Length: 555
Image (cartoon, rainbow, N blue to C red; front, side, top):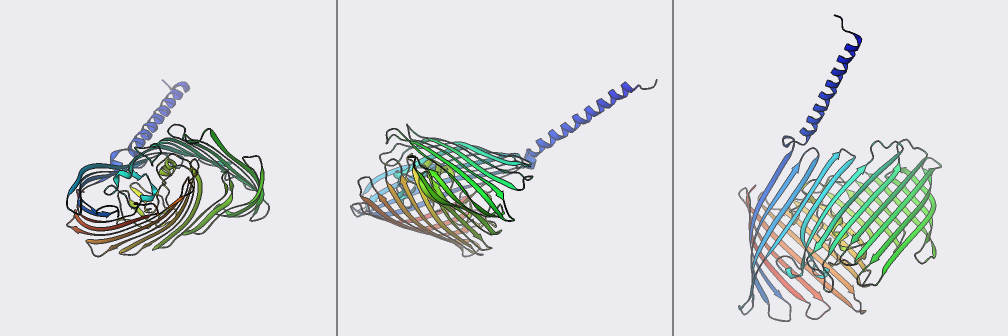
């Protein structure tokens, strides 16, 4: 019996459906395979460190104190990487048994303490170049007072440390195939908590939310272009210690010649501050509009000059010249910056980076209205070297091969000179200049950082000027031995509420020698000297430290 046309159609449809089902199954299996353990890589390390630490200190107001401290610190590091997921975990727990005596050898005190530090990061590439998710959590210990940042640590002055926890969840989205316009959006929600704060302030308990968006022209748009950037940031602290910031910056360009464009610009900057120390809510609002000309070669080589009119918070108007530029000379050298006005007055930003095979330098200047928790979450990175998460010096660090290096799982930028302001939830206007240099030779690594930071506290009307200089050197003396030398200097000038001032000079120098015995065993001898000079009575002190340690790496 011949097969009818209807029967043939049914058979074809069944075959098509079967083929589609087979393709779906293959696709599902492929997706699962991309997440399978066989396609992933998991590495780990585990260490146990035991140390004897002898410290002698003298405040000038009493007998010299001496302490003998025994430390045991196990640590663990995990790195996981697959096609779509990268994550890293570093954790350590330190137990300290401390015995303090005076120069007369009389036992004065005996105590023990525990410190747990950890950092965990995870990044999920949901859709390549389109959607990414990220998470981060950490616990560390911050000095509540910036004046003693380079002096106090877990062994000496730990009563001035605040246990600080932070947790962050974030996502970023980029519109694929931007023919007519390109869109990118990122946002995160986070929390920061501390168990103490500076004297007279409450401990930090802050929830933070932020969103950033950018809209530019697409590939099909030729004669005109635009760049619209917006951000929203909200920090909700204990009680009424809150700050909300909204900022929009828009530029519209029309080409009039080969490399010349006319530009129209507009910006709006709104900030709302509330505090338990100041009654009511303060609104610091600002908006401006301007016209100008742009020399444009490409997205990484342009200079915009505009003439702007602004509307101040008090209703008055002001005129100013604005500048915005970026110029990438080569793949290893770039410079960018801006100058104009915002809600807190005339402001500017600048960044310069240069990289060659064995040398890397960067210069940056930034101004922003921010808080302690925002800075802690921001992870400001002005360093030159890339180091493992667990690194405490330049050993194991390297200079990246590009000025746009993206950190991999288990890595961080080294920045020994980045000190957070005092632990509090007060809004601050922060101006920071940083100059960093890095040198990497076959056996020697050198890092230098000069940083000047001006901090204006918005509620208590205090000001701090902090100049920091840090020099770190790491040298391999042979196949098994390494010497590291670190010097830190801080000059802090604080202007107080009563009109007085306090100037604190701090200095610390550390010299460490490590020798590897066998494959997994390393010994270390360390010497450290620190000194603190203050204008206040009985605030001067001097300390020296001898450390003998042994470290066993399980893997």
